[in-house]
Length: 402
Image 1 (cartoon, helix red, strand yellow):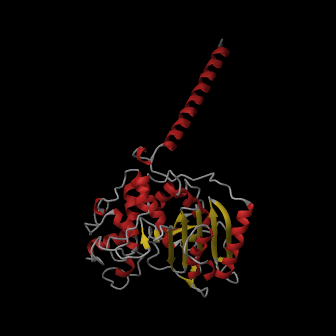
Image 2 (cartoon, one colour; image 1 turned 180 degrees about the horizontal axis):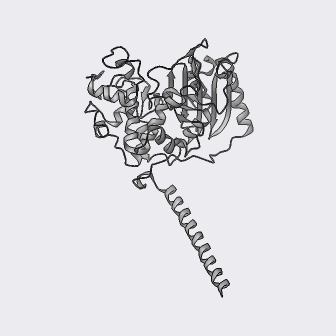
Image 3 (cartoon, one colour; image 1 turned 90 degrees about the vertical axis):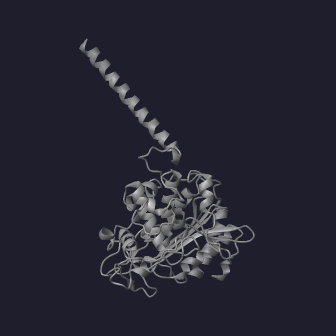
């Protein structure tokens, strides 16, 4: 009898474990299927990978593109002069990649596919992505005044949309902190909160009236990083990790932890290989200070092109130009640069430059192609990779010019 009782108890326990496991699995599935706007209040919206893209590229297609890209590469960076990382992909499939030079010239650490390199202002695309996911989840309103989120913010007419599109009229923090010691002592490392406090207490005037014109300004994205922290109740570093890096498997991407990592990351160099040291602006994040690799940025790019990224109405606003008060083809959306040609063709990208780091991120939305170049030795050749767009679509660039 005791044996039978024990057997019944064991069966009941097994059934309870199975039921609990099924319940947990159902919960995880349901959470994964929820739209951003349907997420419980305590749950962050997260990027979702775009996988199994089609069609699969043929060997002949890859060989043809690879031959042309290799020819471009050798002309653009002769004698293995890139000192960086370069990747071209279509439908999420890598067609061409190359890694050469040194992450650190002192100890001859080679640059490989897993070497994180500072992506400079390409960081703005990632910061904007986190903001847009929070907008998608109804945690942030694009047209809400910044003062709603940051009480110290001294410019009452600036909205979140204006920060994203560089129409706030604010001055660059690098300019109002570099000369006057009564504003900031450059012996001290500047932080995002310091920038906000200075603007709120030191009578830092606007460069131009809010909303009147486009003016690219890093201060906008330093403030967006603080808004991310305010809304998520996490550090910018942790919020970016939970919302973007971890969900997409970007294992070699991180926001610099200045005090912990400043001497461990790849330094940058002038064109003559002289190392460029750290300065008082290197702790500010949002506008810069993300380290990544081309493979990780490819995962990010494909996720931004996934149907699950944003609701269609919001997505259309991302790729709308906000800097066209003067006639021309160059424009800026919500965290993305663009060129809009009269024939209706659009080119979306973002470049970066910080110290000796240069970066280029190109997303050819019509052709599902991605072009990424990163370098830690200063060179403008990084930006020439846009010419490769003609290999995939009708873009008015000439490969042979490079």
